Figure (cartoon, rainbow, N blue to C red):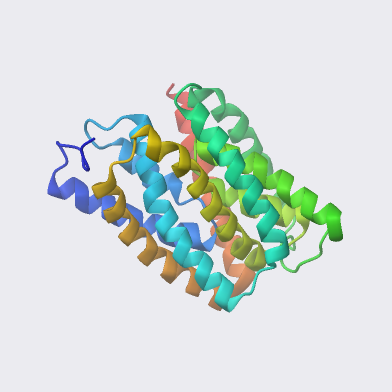
Length: 261
């Protein structure tokens, strides 16, 4: 396996690194960095979809490792919630990655698009949502709900990937009742686990382009560090605005995919 695509030129590499830097920032603030990084990889000459998915995970896991650590130090997310959610998400991601080479992504795009439109409308209609934490459940019910969400979203991350962090924030805010800032902090820990789960499958499969993935990872972690510190400093209101921008961008991207299929 070649560590980088043989036809990759310097200009394309620079553009990929800029995309990874931006993706790291977006992903750290509210998730959805894969919306930028994965499509950029798919434009590389000679790269297959599975190689793009696998290489994207290398870049992403480096970014989420830094942003999750930054959030842990500055926000102190509840690890009793993060742990079961992350473990279930890791298992789901392994299963999703195993299906990635077999199930066409276009089967899922219309469903995801409908969900995102509903989420955007709901978030706009309820301006106070995510302003403060008001948990729906406590104790075992809360942890079981978190694990169930982690399993489903982890499977999506292993199968497709873009928007996983956004879906995690959506579920933590709307289903579990967290404010945007602690939800984003928890989402980064879980997102690290989903990236790891996907790589558990992709690395033995031989799909990772390591040289390119590590280069993207350095750019991604830089953006992730900057984004996490900015989100902590500016709080839930800032994250809500970025969240809506990313969701609308996802809707635009997926809608274009459906229309041009």
